[in-house]
Amino acid sequence: MITVISGTNRIGSYTEKISDQYLKILENATDEKVSYLKLIDLPKDFVESNMYAPTNQHPEITKLQDEHLMNSDRIIVISPEYNGSFPGILKFFLDACSIRNYAETFKGKKILLVGVASGRAGNLRGMDHLTGVFNHVGSIVYPNKLPISNVKAVIDEVGDLKDKSVLGAMEDQVNGFLDW
Image (cartoon, rainbow, N blue to C red; front, side, top):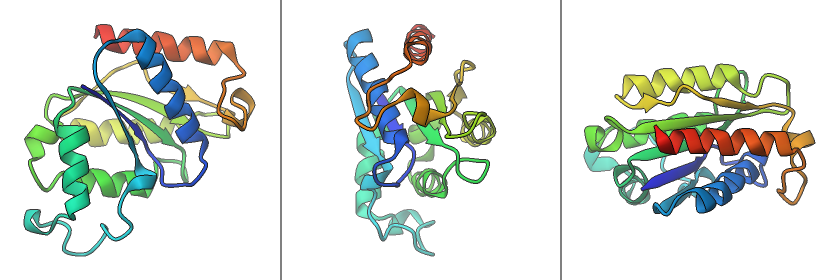
């Protein structure tokens, strides 16, 4: 199974619109089961001081971890740039999932990274930070990371890609990831 993670909890984000495009590409590129995890759907009260004990994991986090991460061989993370890196909610989620069934959740999983930014760097630094996090937990990051810069110019308000070269880069990235 492949899981697509929309890596922000911001309502109406371009990250979610890009994630939706990846779902469409995967639908056409593979018959493999695909799941979709939007961090906007995380429980609002999962971040608490005792979350780092396996017996205190929020039941909704346990459910999401089991459904989306433990059952996946491959994970696609679409992450916006927040303050020169990736969103704190994504880090909190990865931390929360690392306290229970750590190896089954992360070890040997293949990870595809996509950066989204309104600026010109496409969250390159954030993807580097995420690479470090995923390497630390034993995942393998696909080397073809895609920075999507100036996202407001390449996707419209409805979520359709206006820039066909970006769509081609996304398709090439997914196809390479599936063959990897």
